[in-house]
Image 1 (cartoon, helix red, strand yellow):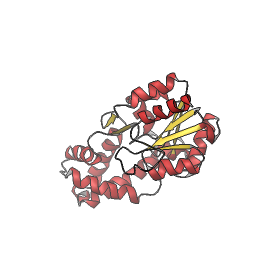
Image 2: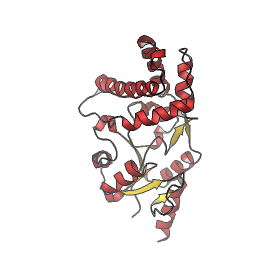
Image 3: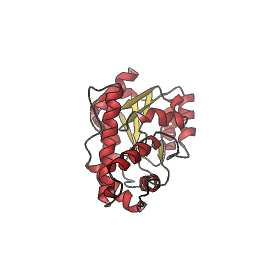
Length: 241
């Protein structure tokens, strides 16, 4: 079935961190007199992020939700620097100033870069009359990031785990996205780079799921694409059939 809506994951699918998270953290930390190896920060961040609870908070709105999001990320960042033995080098007051700057930095376009095929693919899909949406385990800053990257005009819905209270792969975040678009699962595709959160999560919710396997982790997966252009190839195949 030709999709009425195609949902996309955000980070790792539409855009990526420029360089690495460790490089960004190291750069901002240096402005506060703390020198840390970016590769060590990358390893510590991966561990801190993996051990964090799901980024989902039910029932909070406005400033209360934003403070919850800040607290979630503050803990991840604290654990990251503790993991490389550099947390004490800040001191509490300076760490809070550092974190505030870091948190704001990731709401801008500076630490992000689009994948080369992102804009061409979105433009073609929009011209085809297919509605587009985003389903992400990011936080409310994603609204500003999409605006800064000039992507916001392509999407008719934005479903965030922190706002709906469920994080991928929980099927309820996909159900919330479907409800926002007013369509049944069979009318939607979801594309993302995480096999567990995006591919398996979307399939469990009844959507057509495409796994964006840029690194060639599992060429045997039949619903795998190597880049976003693979979604256009599938659409063309549907048209021919």
